[in-house]
Structure formats: C-alpha cells, structure tokens
Image (cartoon, rainbow, N blue to C red):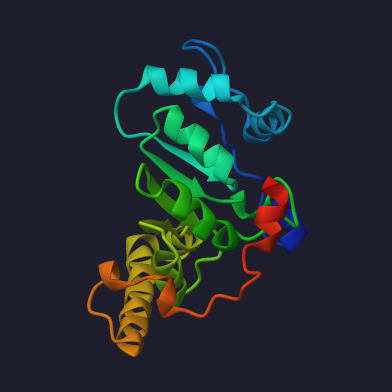
Length: 207
C-alpha cells in the first residue's frame, strides 16, 4: 500500500527536501497546476469511473485502448462490449484494496471467457522470467512489469532498464528450456501445475 517517502528513510531533514513536483495536465491551460501531493489527494478522493464513463472514453479515441484493473469475468465481458482492444488483469498491486486475489488467479477464468475477443494482458507479481512464462501459459498475451523498470530507471537510467529486461529475458529462456518449449506460443495450462482450487476465491467473488 502507498506510504509517504519518509516512512522508508528516503528523505531526511538534514540533507534533502521533498521535490517540487507538479501535475500540469490536470488543469486547463493557463491555470496554475496543483502540487504533487495536492493532486494525489484529489485523485484518491475521486470516485472510480463508471462503465458509462469508460464507454464515453472509448468513443473519444478510435485507436488501440487498454483497460487496466479487470479482475472479474463479467467486467472483462463489459470491456469487450464497450469496444476496448485490450484489458490488463490487475489488482493495481493491492494499492487500492488489500487482500484482493492475485491477478494470476483471475487470469485463467478471464482468458478462457474473452481471450478470443480481446487481447488479455496481466500485471502484478512479475518478478522473474518464470513468472512471465506462467502468465502466458495461463492465457496472457503479454505482461507488464511495472515498478521493476521504474526502480531500474531511477537507479541506473537506460542501462538499468535494459539490465532488468535482460534478467527477465534470460529467466524466460531458462524456463522455456526446462519445459522443452521453443516459443511462447507453444505454452498452455498443461505446462504448469495448477491446483484445483487455484481460482476459487475469484469464482466466489463473481458469484
């Protein structure tokens, strides 16, 4: 869950101050943008979008459009009906509501339901190449790695991000070699051990 930076000792009164961050795209042109923490407070207090809002957004853009945060089959079907070209199975890293099921538990149900109608991606919990292989085997077309690339960028710039991608790529190659698979397209749910009750919590939430 979110924590202010000083909770982790990232800033100290002796040698650092909070950065002067602004959010210029949150206000009409010509008005002063809010500071970062003011904008963050506004965002946290904003009601979540309705499906009417999401359909309106889709109408405003005729290009590829992905909807993130899908954790239920019925919502995945709504995204298809609204004309979205892709969805990301995601619980937003548990930042908005903790103890929600892990995205990979929802992935097989959603991929089975709408995977032939919309591109299904997944994010959350991707820490190594074998995690990518598991997600693809359970129906994801691709994964998003989120914070790993951001931390790498902050620490090492472009070489840091390239290193993270190399680590993931090598892990994927190693897992594929162990499974005897040549391409990601060869992967399927039979390539990994999935417990019978793996998606039980997601089924219960959707019932």
